Length: 296
Image 1 (cartoon, rainbow, N blue to C red):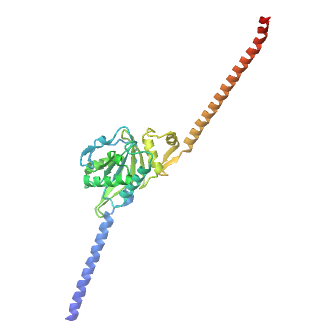
Image 2: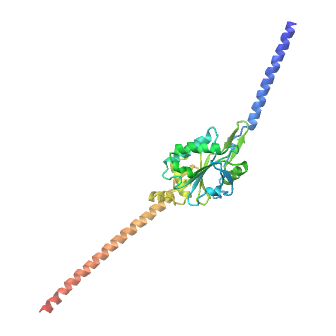
Image 3: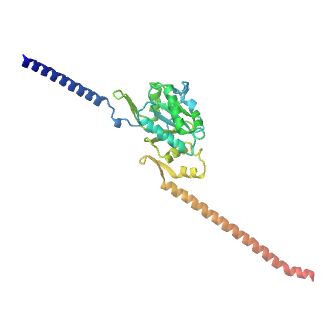
């Protein structure tokens, strides 16, 4: 009887362990099927596309706004697609963006605007308001609040906006997170996608050059900005702006031509003045004998 009981107990224990092991295997299999492969999240280059200004969202105060209401038509703007309860990637992107904005020679509201949109339809204005307050404090420019908009919206509007700019994202129900691209979009004042800057953190010079390019030089703060607009080109392989050798040679050629032209003009003016001086002196010499005859 004792042996029999022990055997039954062992059999029951083996069954429990087998069931637990099987359960873990099933769970692991489900996770493998549902965890999203990052390689499947690929953004699409949609430069030149128009911002869908008719799409409606809610701002951080809960007010319903159209994207078109936020486009000034005078200043370029940045668009960021994130979600406010993102555990890592979005915060890194927003931190880097805010740091660039803080140290840029361009200012939010004066030179450009910013629109941040949550890709999570479950998030609302309260989260947007808290996030805005946090990043405005980090930025240290409270006056920028009127021009940095934090939006939430419904799935349909979010998806249409993402598709319009080529932003890729998918919801992962196992992790309860969104797998998504990391991009910052620069738009022209009239709402056309000018440049997309990939990566979590953009170089400060890329941050400024993308704005300068999107404005077509209108926000240039001096001759240095205008030269930069001519000499730098975006290189997809370098994932940033690089000095264009061809543009530099063209600019150097123009400078040389202007220098030679100026030099020739100066030499010509000098020669004209010398010729006039010689003519005047010769006239004085020729007039001297006749003056003596008149006196005689």
